[in-house]
Length: 451
Ligand SMILES: Nc1nc2c(ncn2[C@@H]2O[C@H](COP(=O)(O)OP(=O)(O)OP(=O)(O)O)[C@@H](O)[C@H]2O)c(=O)[nH]1
Ligand SMILES: [Mg+2]
Image 1 (tube, protein in one colour):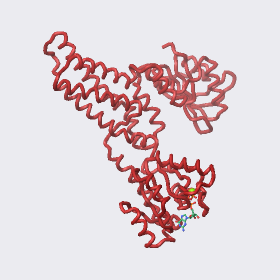
Image 2 (cartoon, rainbow, N blue to C red):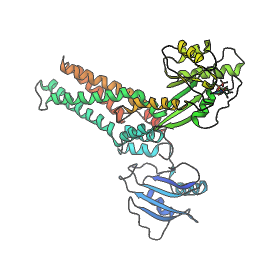
Image 3 (cartoon, protein in one colour):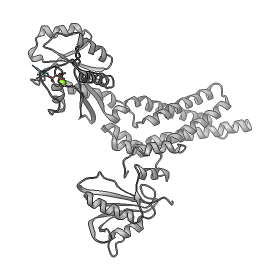
Image 4 (cartoon, rainbow, N blue to C red):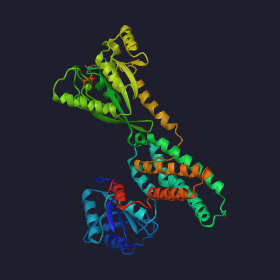
């Protein structure tokens, strides 16, 4: 381990009670001697000690130091974590002193990269650390934590074991043309079971993006129906401008809300109009259409005080195949005849009258959002996969299916040997054992510095 020693702030920059500075590498002990002002401070691994930090001239702060001896540390190298008061000048002073004693600023994700390189964690676990930090739902957090604890890796390793055993059987039957001491049937059964589990993980992965990033919800409708009023009601803030002038909202406005442990990004968009009123609104409408096309669910707002018209029908065409809730706003100035007209226009739909002005029935929008999460909560999958893992895993599941069918029916040993090699390579890509450097760089560069 002749890597350079690295240093970085591990907590967000800014003023707060505590900041943590991390150091990793073989100069860590020497650096600690240089920055700790103490006559006989004995550092025991994994034990926090109170001390005074110095920049060589003055004592700059008091705090805690925890030393971790290689290989029993996050990175697998000697590591120190220094807790000081979070003040930008203090941090600069201490990090500067540490740098002058031989450490360099860590790159994004470099601590985790070293943990991966030193075999402390595999690539799936490394990725899950970043994903855990950035997760946008409680369920996803749990799944990512399971990944970090090695649940997905353990499944992959069990597949690897089965395939390796099968490989031994195949190779020796090619070489010696005889029965093997390993019994094949239980291996195939185990392989089948694990592969089915991976198929389930794959099929539940369609929800992963929602779990990662949150539900994207758009309020769509023609101009002046009350979209911005509803938006403000949902986010409980006067965020979007409301006025009786049609075409008030020109560009989209977004705000996140949190319900049932999930994140919802609510978007208020420019209302759809039939007459063009200038370039800006046209661009606004273009953005509105994009937002509607790319969201997870639409709240389609009608104006209950008016008759449904061609603009409503055009918007309905755009949203009818997406998850949607239809509401008829301004119920306070409507009547039952008008509401009946909506039911006739949209015979297969549920039209929900509300009045945001009188705060009547507005709860049903929040109830609708909560109902979107139920399908996901019913999933019984403990782990979640990212896009990279999904691409590799879907290939792996197919190759293994092929192996199982082949062994049951034709038993083409040449093809089997080839498929076994293929699957071992895919597993290596998943765990990072055979991942090319540029792929690894791509993954770790998305980490924050200090992680
Ligand atoms: N009576 C009544 N008026 C409402 C209700 N909701 C909104 N309004 C009024 O309708 C007008 C338009 O409301 P907005 O929220 O700006 O409507 P919008 O759909 O965002 O409009 P654009 O941004 O122009 O597309 C305002 O004058 C609101 O006060 C309601 O439930 N009842
Ligand atoms: Mg508006």
